[in-house]
Amino acid sequence: MTTGTAEPQVTLAHGGQLHGLWEEGVRVFRGMPYAQAPRGALRFAAPLPVSPWSGVRDATAFAPMAPQLARSARADAPMLGGDDCLAVNVWAPTAEPGAHLPVMVWVHGGGFFRGAASEPLYDGASLARRGVVLVSVQYRLGIDGFLHFEGEEHAAPANRGLLDLLMALQWVRDHIHAWGGDAARTTVFGQSAGAGALACLMGMPASRGLFQRAILQSPSVACQTLQEAAAARHAVAVLAGVEPTLAALGAAQQAAVLHAVHRLASEPALRQQHGLGGRNFFPLRPVVDGQVLTAPPLEALAQQWAAQSPDLQVLVGSNAQEMRLYHVPGGAIDRVTEAQVHAFAQDVGLSPGAADALRHLLPPAQQTAGEWLCALQSDYYYRVPAQRIAALASQWARSAHGYEFTSPSPQWRGRLGAAHGVELPFVFGNLYTPTGQELAGPAPPIALSEALQQRWVAFARDGNPGWAPYAGAQPPVEHVGETLFCAPHTQPERFALWEGVL
Image (cartoon, rainbow, N blue to C red; front, top):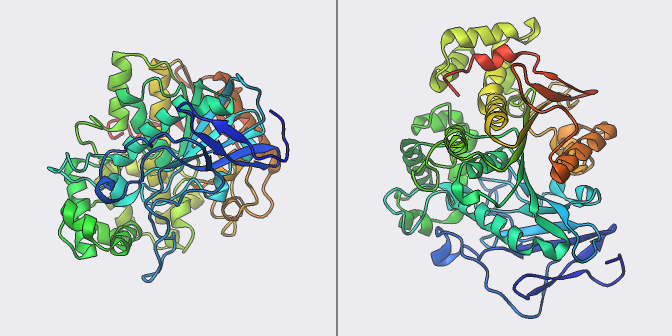
């Protein structure tokens, strides 16, 4: 197949056809439903596959994002998105029939209540031009995807957003050959909540065989207990002014529910008031329900992989100063008190001695209460989970590779640093999108983006990103900064402080 003026067209396994667009030499297909729209009786149900069709369908426009509010929403902010959100997008290089190109499937983050595959930051053209078929996935968010309705399982199974992702991966397995992709060479990759969702999937037997490699960027693996899930449901219901039942929340004005979730996400004191402790940085998470998720991800991986070694290669890492994304903009980092730091440490089960030890591992200028809390939360939410997953994969999986992103952003007068998400514009090569500029600044190092894309694609192609595997007593990781080099973590003792906690 060669680039031409005619629209690119593909035929799926069931015979239905789709037409997309040529964009700078890449075939682009947007908004292809992999499941029926979750509206009406299907809103809180497990996803159902799309019925086959005859003829040619248009695939040139993104599907709506899952219902949500803008990140900086005011009280009168309108709702974004719509219920017909369960869709995938494909960017594919030109390929001859029968090509067996590696496939990369992207799962976006957003705290399980916001985000969209249509975000320009996640445009897949740059990676596709490097020889992969790039798929991005949308899944149910917020109460539709993750609010738990205990005792009403038949009407609303747990973790519906995870079930959506499983169905999307089944769609990729069944149809990606239409773009020259090889379903047996599928790499899933995600960041933050997206990586956390993939960590959940990796511990679920239902996911076996749907992907052979996984890249987890800053995996957010914290899940809710049934008690925490019940507290979250009651909190959303109270703030929305309805009863905490499936019927009442389903019938509630959607804007009221979205604003309830948004308020809980943005106001820590409000979360605490409703029984959601400091461990719950966002109000909605996957729930350890005993059926879809039988254990928290780190436990599930240890149990499942010890019982049966996975045919899986894993690349996992985090950023050096993750929580600066949340504490630097707006100046919260300068308002933190030592009492808040001690309360967080106690909430997550870290001893006062361990918390103090971590503080003294920071440079003297970074031992303020705000910097200390940033370091504790960065480790707890992202850095230690990434290290634990790398260790488990090195023991049980086919291979493991680790990284640490250290390249500082110049944003917020240089204080943002290597914060959560700063690697994203470099991974996708979308440095000059609005979000890319917000994260990486006006003059980002283009060579770093080239290097990261090359390594991610190499891993998707053959499982080797180009540096030493994570193994041994002092396992090496790739340090991704002004220069790239492979060496052990600079402060392994920081990870040791969390033994028995994570």
